[in-house]
Every structure is written in structure tokens, then in C-alpha cells.
Length: 149
Image (cartoon, rainbow, N blue to C red; front, side):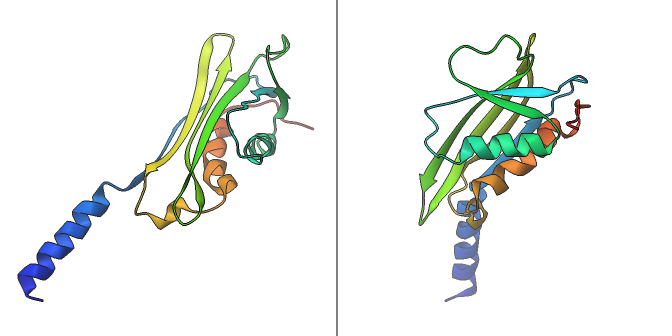
């Protein structure tokens, strides 16, 4: 292969991979008085382990969690809504997750994981927990939460 052909092939490969991205965006919760997060069950998320992983990771931040369906309990000052999707590419992988934390005034914080354009990236594979753990750490890490005793 000629040097020009190698250069063109290399540039083509780089150009093709440049569109492959995985993004993580976090707007941390800044509330100073959180003791519990009520987690709204989302029946459209079909991966059984997602909700328990979210709750465990929130509890590792020192918060209580309570899962509810339907109407939010009156005693919930802060609640979390989530959605998540998986795709298949040699194996199942988390392609998108969006976690939104609300208080009485509205949106308090948000974390998004987006691998929908990560087609050529091998780091899209891994456990769901490993993908959402840094998001939840950052989402609640800056808040002065009422720690569990």
C-alpha cells in the first residue's frame, strides 16, 4: 500500500471514529437538607437490576431511598425519576440513562449517560452499575445530605 493510501485510510478511520462518543453530563444536587430520596418506579425500564442498583448507589451516598408507584407519597420532599435503555452489539450494554432529582420547586439535579453514538467504542460495554455509579456519586456528592446513622 502506498504512503498516500495509508494516510487516506488512516484519516478515514479517524474521521469514522470521531463520531463515536459516550457522554456523561451531571448537574449536581445542591440542596443542604436531604435525608431521603423517593424513587419513582419506571415500568418501562425492562432491566430488572437497574432500579435496585440506583437505590443502592444513592444509599451509599448516605441517603435513605423509598421506591413508590403511582402517586408520590406526601412525605417525599425529594424524588427521583429515571429512564434507561439498552442496545445489543455483540452483547447488551447500557446505551442511555437519565436520572432527574426534583424537590418541591422543580428540577434540583440531573445526571445523563449517553452511549447512543458510541458505536465503535469498546468502553460502552461493562456493568450497568459501573456506568451509573460515577453519575450518582457526582449527582449527590456535592450535597450536604442528612447522613444515615
